[in-house]
Image (cartoon, rainbow, N blue to C red; front, top):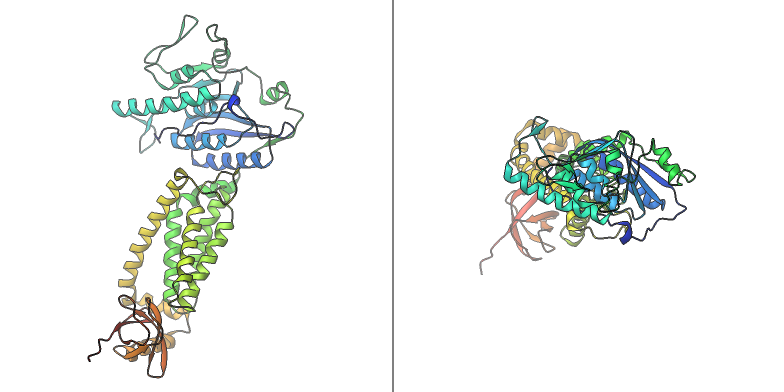
Length: 465
């Protein structure tokens, strides 16, 4: 929650708007608390505004604030829109709402509205504000103050005014009047924010007070162009829940697919794994993080791995490429790519932090679950049920057990290199086998020492001269 704001949009003087002056105006509501669901709405709104070549993006602001890390993400998203950016404070813009407001080029306010009170606080585990240690408070206030001050300055706002909203050790004096004493944090009404300072010749923060957003649009000569109002959808709320359990979905998917490859036939294990992966990609798609192209790439990789294991054992290349495609698809499925850049762009390190974290947790969790299942499942009645439900029943299971008993300890000769998978001949029968350790060349005598699921695992037989 207390991470500093890292992204700062450019000011009007530094940006050549890429949007057309004839383009539409997008209105994006910033309401309620600044929490994760809001990022999906903002991401979709910015993406649509960029694609529509909008001339202006207006934030309809009414919030008590929220998490600093979510504020950081929203400011970064808004910075991707290179046209005119405006905040209309419709009632209140406290804390994180004030941070987001100064990330736009212009600020206007409604009558009897307020902006400010942006000092960072520590949220207690049970809800509500907790006490922050003095050293932590000083450190975090300093970091956030510096970033927001730079953001405000680059957008043409008075950095000292913004700093007084964050740092209670700062005193703000304008035209001989103390607006904020030391030990207090600054909060401005609409009239105070619009007051022009004789020292700077500019208003403190607001460019004017207007009765409504429609009145503001009329004043800015934007009422005659197409107006697009972004509204939250129920799917975006579902996406919030899906992305919060992304690691769990990946564990279910990985374990399900692994067990499906380890049992004969195709049954509910494989279906369950594929459904878990489908829900994972659906969450990223609805949230606007990615398109369905990554789901298609994942299926291609899965198909290549299946070919390696079932049709072309021992080739390695097909399976390795397939595994790499699957890994990249899972990673990119949760990466927030800039909509203004082409699909083949490489993500920055900051974009990869959360996806990599979720993927590592999933891989570690899957390894633990698979290890436990490999050691415990064969000894349980559930294992027989799984095998029976995926093939023709008990008879198939018994046939498989009989085959294992006949091959256990048998010696044969490899007819292809084992690296580690390949083929060997035992009498008149050719069998797919796995090497116990290292590569075994073609024509080498081998012995079956155990089974990995239904696949014989062999070792090289040292021949005496």
